[in-house]
Amino acid sequence: MPAMRLNAAAVFCLLAGSLSAAPTVKRLLVLNPVNEGAQADFAYIGPSLAEAIRNTLAESYFFLHPPEEAIGETQSGNLIQDEDMHTKSAALQMGEWLRQDLVLNGRYAVGNNRLRLNLSLYEMETGRMLVNFKTEAPLSAKMFDMFNKIAAELGTKMSEALPSQQALAASG
Image 1 (cartoon, rainbow, N blue to C red):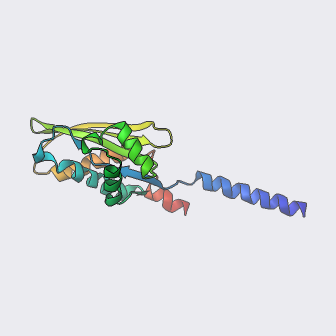
Image 2: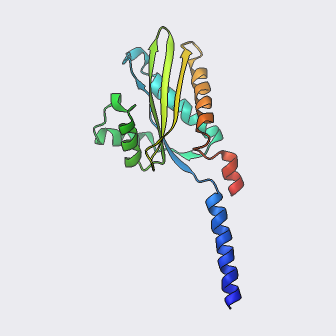
Image 3: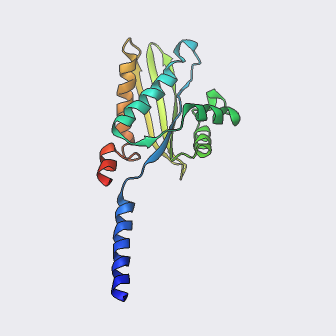
């Protein structure tokens, strides 16, 4: 009998060890970047860029994102203004209320026919900024291709925070 208990304990330890080494699915909230210039002509950039980021990241990484309706209801229900969504405090509050592991927020400005972008990724558990991503790119007819390229570059920088599709598939 004691040998069986020892074997059961050894099997449990092995299973627990392998489970803790397996990648875990993260809950990632991607907030629309805020238009710093408040130019109505460029208001589409924030939502379009956020969608491109979510879609591009989903090609390589596995994460859960809350529904857009829940984000909007949480924001309005807690009186967070659109122009404040780029701040760390708004990101952390939204992440807390929506029970997320990671929050990506930021802002952009358009000037001299160029897009300047500054995005931050926060870890909810510690409140620490994991990634600060800054880039500048020309505005052009191929803007949506540029959004996908920005999202791919951001994904490379976020790779330590998000489990890859392959890692999750390999872990079962």
